[in-house]
Image 1 (spheres, rainbow, N blue to C red):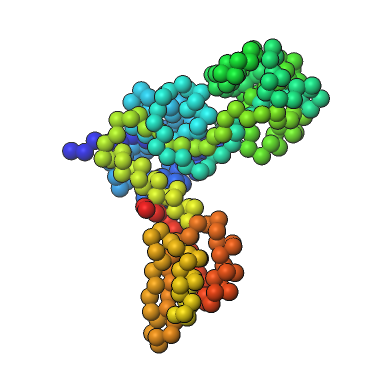
Image 2: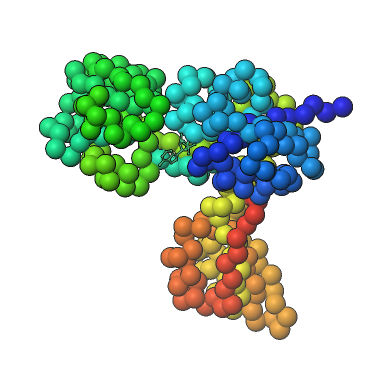
Length: 282
Ligand code: AMP
């Protein structure tokens, strides 16, 4: 009998919805209700454990879960030394150092001898220690951005994505400690089932960066067009009835589509279609 694989998934916060969406896009059939702590996947021998995002590294390290979805920042803060199987391309943010607008501090080096409030004390302490900069870290659980107003710190280290929360609180960024995004971590006890899940999830992440491109073109334009869209190996070229035109199919980077379309038209491409890809295993 096969062994059930357990995946630790954020139960709330900003990583929950995209994590659930990713698992469903990878082919796992389940219903995530707000309250369930554990959900059985209908079409595979998998249990999803809904836990706090910051608890995921610990639960995977302890072997309670085989795989987990969390943030780079939370893995670093946990101190757990877990293999990162995949970067998931959502939950992007940076752990940044910031100071009040009127502060004389202007760089990471200026923090020497200062107090820094943060919900990431381990990462912050290690970052400054590695640089040989002596700081006092003030650990806080939340509301880090008000710490300087309250007089408990000279600056903060906090997660930033757009920077608008910092601005609203009269703070400006002076340096980055860590770039973060959501990741799939494993406990390193890989087996066939764990590998298959990672491959399926990875196929969705890879597919999101790609598009399937179809177009028709006169035979004499095929070489020019094939050079523009080489695809995963080579574009598929199929003759159309009538003998003068062919259909060309290829996979392209989503980011390149904008620049490719006018060039394909110029080269003689017609009836150009750009389609999303659900999963891609190279
Ligand atoms: P939450 O559960 O909503 O507090 O979010 C937890 C994780 O979401 C963080 O540890 C980060 O990995 C990620 N995240 C992405 N963008 C941000 C952001 N702007 N602020 C805080 N966390 C973020």
